[in-house]
Length: 274
Image 1 (tube, rainbow, N blue to C red):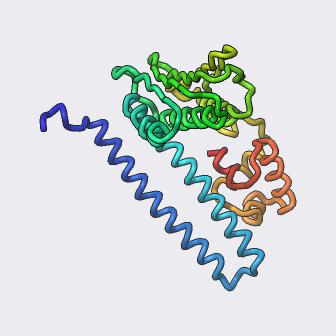
Image 2 (image 1 turned 90 degrees about the vertical axis):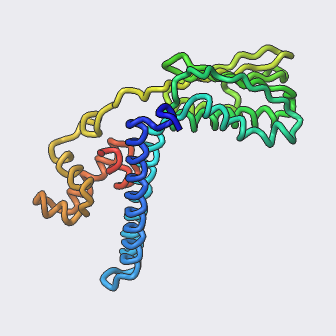
Image 3 (image 1 turned 135 degrees about the vertical axis):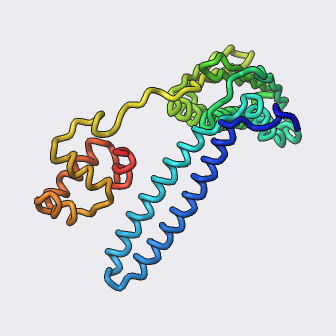
């Protein structure tokens, strides 16, 4: 092995950090399970209280896990040619055993590496598009092309179907939702009798941070105090005692915080605040 075959210090640091994060997640999951068991077995809580507390613990753990998973996926980089190769592998059974002729136009080897979230979404988008074309039963040939302009991943999925596809087609709704979630763009060009071309652009850099909840939503001084204690895991009674207000007043402030933030649970509110 030559020096050029060895991973760079940055790559090794990323691997070490990823391993540390995975170990922490395992510990957190174990702690969550132990907490759930302790809550459900507790002789100090009746069945209703135990279920309520268990649901809160599980909801908070799920939000934390999904948030960390999204964060890790965004941190990991994948070479564009490697991501495209994985896509080809995903579609191999369809190409090998189906009636659809799928042509792959390789991206340039010098293309910028894709953030993990973008690579994952790009493959899912292409798979969904190809399956939609297969389900229509009108396409016999599909061409899939990826390119990279340094700032965006550019994808094209062209078929030889009836050419009746539009951007408002129900089959493209899941794709449009994924593209929108990544601040990308989707367009469809169709020619009757000649087929359709679905073009997707996904930015490689995340949009500018919109700021914390306290910065993006107008909150009163008391709401900020309640939010701070909610995110620390305090229950209504503890918040009331800490701030010298009644539990009903705490419930009122929490309800306002949920409404203003668009969250449906305290766990979601906590995730947004952090």
